[in-house]
Length: 93
Image 1 (cartoon, rainbow, N blue to C red):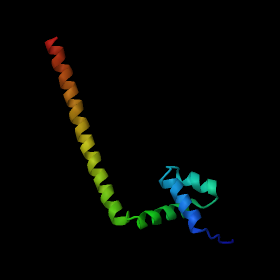
Image 2 (cartoon, rainbow, N blue to C red):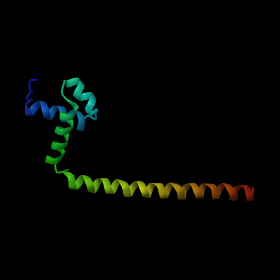
Image 3 (tube, rainbow, N blue to C red):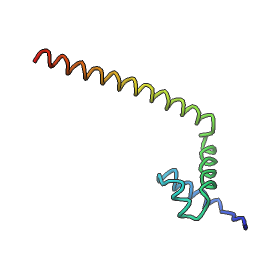
Image 4 (cartoon, rainbow, N blue to C red):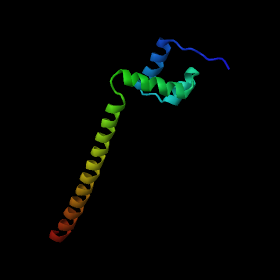
């Protein structure tokens, strides 16, 4: 099987379609006729070049986890307050 070499411009345009325009990696890969594994690699390398390497990605993931936990706690508190408000409204009315 012959190995295909893609130009830097081709790779950067493919990555731009995923990162800037929000298209899915698999969709872009099919449209361009490249392997989705190759496109995932190109996207990861582009993010690392921009400074979003593994360390910063881990930091962002931990921040997302913390925010999800905070959102869950806040939603539970809101639900409790809604139930309490409904209960007291029935008592007074």
